[in-house]
Each structure stands twice: as C-alpha cells, then as structure tokens.
Image (cartoon, rainbow, N blue to C red; front, side, top):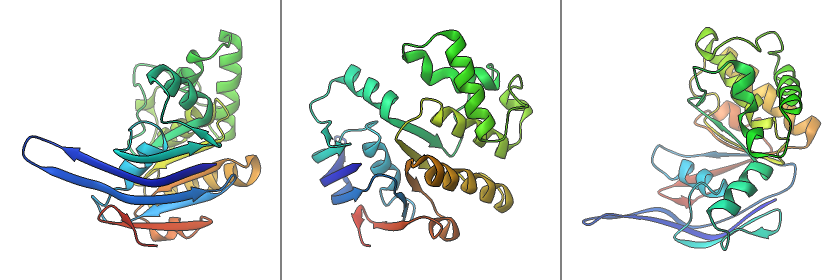
Length: 221
C-alpha cells in the first residue's frame, strides 16, 4: 500500500544542513498496522509527513497503492490525499468555532457530495467512534479523549484506505489512550484500514502488527 525507496530528507539554511532522513526504504502492506518509534528528533514525524504527501523528500521515490506521487502537482497531491489518506494529529487540530459534526464534515467539502450526504457520513463516522450524542457540541465542551475521537471521525469520514496517526495517544492519560488505541485497532481489524502510527509508547506499539525504529534519521529495526 505504501512503498518508500531510499528516502532522504535534508533541511538547509544559509549556515547549516540537517539530514532528517537517511536512505529509508520501507514497505507497508495493505491492511497492516505499523508503528514507528524512536527518540525525539529522529525523523519520525518527517517520515510520516512524507508518507502523507505533506512534505516532499530530497531524494527517493514514494508509491502509494502502486502509484508514483513524485510527478504530481499541488492540486493533484491534494486530491490524492483527500481520497486515499486520513490524518490524526496529537493536538487534534479541530476548529473550536465549529460544532463537532461540522468539524468532521470538513474533508468532504472537497468532494462531490451534497450537504445531506456530508451530514449523514459525518454522523455515521461519529457513531463509529462512540460520539453519536455529541454532534452539536463544540470542541471546547469535550474532554481530550473525546476531541481525539472527533479527530478520528474526521480522518475516517471519507473512508480512506490509509490512516496516518502522529502520536494519537500522546496527550491522553493511559485509560483514554487505551480507548483511542482500541478504536484504531478496530478500524484496522473490521474495515481493513492500513494504519501507520508514530508513538513514544512501547505498550501501544506492541499492539500493532509491526514496529519500525528510527535513530538519527535512519531505520535501525
């Protein structure tokens, strides 16, 4: 589902050059749940952003669902992301002025869907994460765990084949973190969604199919 070949990422300024990723090659199978671990600054989030086509590598090739992405322009990349990928972030990235249902609808605004279809799909996604009774609440009226559930609903509302999750349990206590992890595991088991998750939590990582470790921008396991 995802193939990275000899990915390198270099950040340059006038005075310094930083190698964030060094010759990373990685295959993620369809329906796999992969976790990525490593110390802070080792390149985990950079790798996830490159997988999600939010950032471009300095060198190397990315294929998603056997499609090369290197030649796509910004509009093509945005359309491809919207169709294939769902994103979950540690800090939720919800819009506080919008109700929960409206937050979840957002990715569907860029698709050819009616307002009625958007609301039905958003309500269905919220029911899947156990928030069917919070449609008209605002993010500020929810707990951290509930906000992360909204973020998951937003990620899955377009029925993407791949979910990329950056520290999805990082801001939560262990009980709530386990609940969020169970939702992700269920999405993987029931819907066959391919998931790549960056985490600092060994316990969460060992619940997934496979663990990849990074150190100083290179894959060590």
